[in-house]
Amino acid sequence: MNSSLALIWSVTAATTLLQAANGLLQAVMPLRMQAEGLSVTAIGIVAAAYGLGFSTGCFLAPSFIRHVGYIRAFASLAVMVAVLVLAMTQAHTTLAWVLLRGLTGVTLACIFTVTDGWISARATSSHRGRILSIYMISTKVALMLSPLGIGFGDIRTDGLFMAISAVMSLSLLPVAATTTKEPPAPLNVKIDVKGLFTAAPSAVVGSFVVGLVNGPVIAITPVFGVSIGMNQETAAALLVALQAGSLVMQWPLGWLSDRADRRYVIAGLAAGTSLVSILILIASAQGAQQTILWSFAAWGGLALCIYSVCVAHACDIVDPGRIVSTVGTLLFAWAVGVTIGPLFGAGAMELLGPQGLFIYSALASLGLAAFIILRIVQVRRTPKGEFVTITPSSSAAPAVVTLTETAADNRKQADQNAASAVIREETSS
Image (cartoon, rainbow, N blue to C red; front, side, top):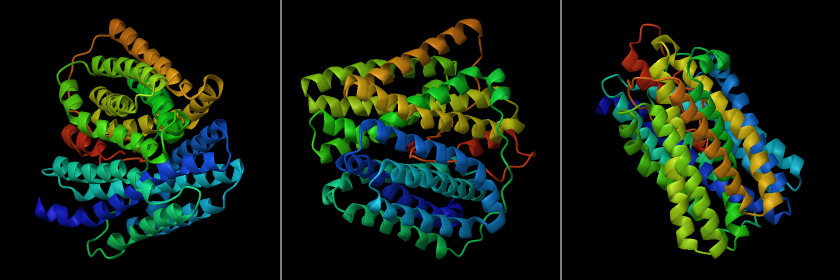
C-alpha cells in the first residue's frame, strides 16, 4: 500500500491543487460575467461552450498523451490552462468568454485524462480501491472548499483570477519533481452510443439528463444566489453545499445500489432531485437562506450521485472487455448534456426569473424518473456487480478513463479501473 501511494502522491498532489483552482474559478467566473453586464443567457452560452470543449478534449486526449507522454502532457496543459485563466481578465464580450471557456474545457478534459490514467495504471489491483478513494477524496475536498476563497478578493478586479492562475501553475511542481516512472502510452477508447443505448438505455439516458441538469445548476448557481439577494460569499457557499452533499452521500448510495436493481436507485435519486428543486423554489421565495443552503446540500447529495449509479448499472450489463468503452461512452453522453443544458437552464431563468433554473431542474429530473420507471416495468434485471465512484463534475471536470487496460483483465479489475473516470462536479461538470 505504501509503495503504491509513493507512486501516485505526485499526481494526487498536482490534481488537488488543480481542482482547488478549478473550484474557485467555477464560483468567480459567472459572477465576473454578471458584473461585466452579461445576461444570464450569455452566461449559459459560455457554460455550454465549456461542455463542448470538454467533450472535444475527451477525443483529443489519448492521442496527445500517446505522442508526448503523461508528464510532458500534464506540464504543457497546466501551463496552457493557467494562461487561459489570466486571459479571462481581459474578456469583456460574450464571444471572448465563449472562446476562453471552450478552450479551458478542452484543456481540463485532457488534464484529467492524464491524471486519471496515471492513477489507474499505478494503483495495484490489491490496493486500487483504497488508492482511488484517497485520490477522489483529496480532489473532491479541494473542489468543495475552494469556492470559499471568493471572500478574499473582489470579483470586479483581477486578483482572484491571478490567484487561480498561480495555483494552477503550482500544480506543475509535484509532477515536474516526481522521480517515479510515468505509465506506458495509453490505448484509444471507442465511443459507441448506439450500441450502449441498445444494451443499457437507462444508463445512457440517465447520464445525458444528469448533464442536462447538473451542468446549468453548477455553472449558474452563484448567479442564482446573487439574484435572490445573497452576497457573493454566500452565493459561492452554495457550490460548497452541493459538493459536500455529494461527498457525504456517494458511498451510502453506492452501498444501497449494490443491493437492488440500480435503476430503482436512479429513479429514486431523480425523483428526490425534483422534490428538492421544488423545496429550493419555496425557500428562495421566502428568503430563507439557511434552508436554501441545506437544500443545496441535499440536491448535491442526490443529483451529483446519479451518474455514478448509471455507470455501475451499465458495467453490470456489458461484457468485461467493453468496460472502458462503456465508461467513455457514458462520459460522452454526459458531456453532450452539459453542452446544451446550460442553454435551457439560462433560458428558463430569463423567462421565469431566478427560480426558473430549479423549475427546469424539477421537470427534467421528473422526466428521467418517469423514463427509468417505465424501463423497470418493461425489463426486469437481477442486481449484480459493484458500485463505482465516478463523478464528472465538476468539475468539473473530469475526463476519460483507464487508458492502459488490457484484454486480459478480469471483471473485477475492469470495474475498479472504470472508477478512474472523472466530474467534477462537474462538474463538475
